[in-house]
Image 1 (cartoon, rainbow, N blue to C red):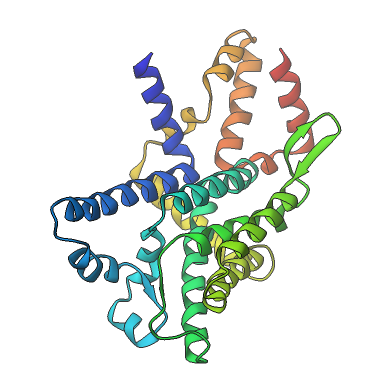
Image 2 (image 1 turned 60 degrees about the vertical axis):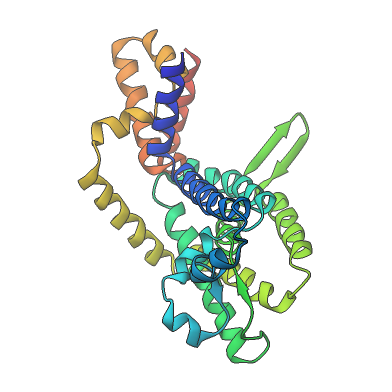
Length: 289
């Protein structure tokens, strides 16, 4: 049983970009805070950690300082200080990121997430150039990147149902509004700096749907090519089938099983939106058998 659970986890990790990002950020969070906690327990305090590690990960509002630490354009997304904020960000990312992956397939979330983080950081430095954000301000966290994913999802399929019970229907755009309200309340202090960071993510989500769609699709194509060079395609395609889907397929005729597997493969690679109307009807019929 344990072996099966581990196998399922690795299959999910290999086919879900949202899971890859969540695991990566979570592991980084644990490592960084383990180092910080070790320093505290040993009585050394956090001075060494803050000056020699944390300060080289967070993004600083000063453009001049960023020139000396250009890698912080990416690493600040890993520099989450609060566990609760980290947990909240990962939940939001999972909720909205899974919608994009289910509809479009693999390799769409990663470009939105990291480009959103970069643009958020650039907006912060632009605000600093106009002297509305002090040089001393710095930030660590994934809110700008997550807000890019949230915005991209809300404008791609605003009426996509997140939760549906009877006549109660909660759509993507409703949850997106809740996200923005909660983040706005959290960012009450240093509001201009945080607004700049958040705006960068929101703008990224907008141009994902309107304006620079081709750029994001080129990033997706590049990731697919890189993945094709480094992964076992046969294994990856098999990973999109869950245990229940395999059990159901076993009871079908051989021709129906082949057709069902073909449709599942297509969904796993390109998302639900890639199916034609006839293919969706066929999938619905096959899944009932």
